[in-house]
Length: 206
Image (cartoon, rainbow, N blue to C red; front, side):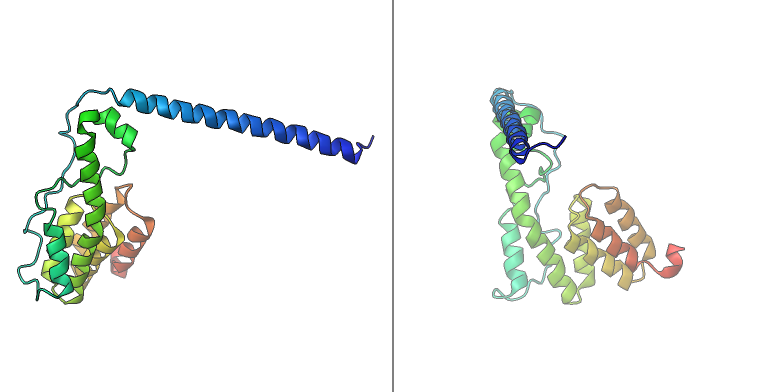
């Protein structure tokens, strides 16, 4: 038996109304759960932050020769050093609520600042490596890039520059170790690993 067109339309309208109400209820519940969790997080007492890895901004990974005051390298180094006495840490894996839950509300401002500083600095870290590398200052570029990688910064620019340096100096052992290190981190983009592997000598990939 064929269902009249009007009947089909009514069935569709009823189904659509049901789905809209269902999703509305789900959204209301999700929002309610979020704000309840956020409310409870606001009462979490201060907890230890000893497990947080802070990156110490010092002169140690910066080049001695930074060029003239109007050079890009000088500007990048100066900007980085503005954070010499400030907290810097990658906390991007946590939401604001999770930070409060894990470390307590009293620590939230400092931790939020540390994460913000990290986010701001990472592009300058990459610029530092790039400028030194493009200027042929491989040892200094390697020193800076290695410092960042050892501190868990696996951005495409920093890691690939370090990989290219190892490739240029024919240090397959270091290049292989770099691939192993970044491959083990969920922070690393797949394209970064793919590029590093392309730098390995053909006989090393066999």
